[in-house]
Length: 469
Image (cartoon, rainbow, N blue to C red; front, side):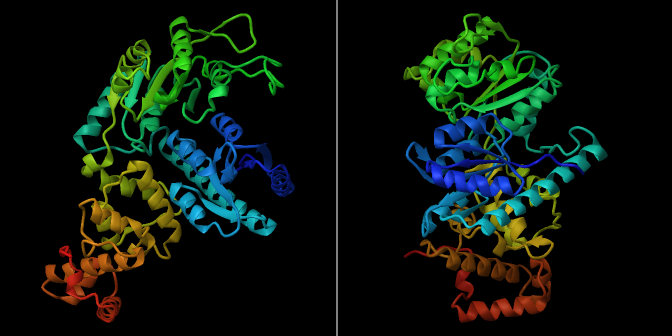
């Protein structure tokens, strides 16, 4: 399958580092763009088309981890590789937890960097092949997830009703619940499906660039405007403009946005004549816009304009019926670049069901993606799941780990595993062969684990009941 060249964005405030890294990437055959800081990087990323961002963590106008989180929240699927100062391991770990693919240390080693890019390119190729295969076999929407919870069935019903209309839609819900996916679904079921769907995170655009990003500018309109830019409204002309996190827009921009929607026209910065535009607006937020209106932080007239038709997407913890099917769906979709796994070991599955998923579906997808990469066999095991999930599951009131006090993550994960094994033995009246079958491990592995638990002092007190301290 032919595949377009991978586009890389280098974001670093140090000109020398930026140039060195860009040259390494360009000489390896990739397309390269550069940004001198977080603000310029955000402006470039929201325009789309960037496959990989090589992003410095500490910059004078912002930090790379915040930029990464903003991109994830807006549905931008650019792969981030963080560039960090030597020895800043805590910051690098924080970046990985925020969704970074990997990190490299300064000074950047050429071979190490190209190895990371080659891995990403291979993964990207497999994903595109998988996506093309699913499309050719099943046609559009063939791999669309089918919800079973009543709450999400109602969401789908409402989306189906409003999609054929031109009504503005406001989608509310916590971060990671899939508001962007719902917006795209509404677009694909509308009469505008063959026209552009342009998504933008309103909180990811620097305030000084908002008007230019939304409405465009003429060449020479301001310093740095070396070419004419259409802007998001004109790029979405005839289609749908998805305004994610609309509550992040400052008041002066809310006024300009309302005027553009009502007048169906925009005037690029530096232009004398307004241009007509036909755009359907879908907005989303994880904030309480009603409270913001009461506090004077969001225009009441824009709120009423946006909320002509509202759809609330409930958090994953409120619809456990969807969780098991979502896990299966995400594994079938090949979260590790097309690699197909048969499922999860019972212990790993129990942990995923005990966890409250504060990051919702996006967090679930990230955890399964990482676990799928780490898995040695055809199934995800407990060891492939991030250790902190067991502690958080316990603290959130899910399956308790071992005690009321959370120790280091490795110890807590071990206690959690021991508790599952002992509860399984109790459930089968200590029949170890049957317990091994239920746990999805060999009998010899079960004996080995029991011996290890005893040596580590993890007897049956590691079972599911927390103790007082």
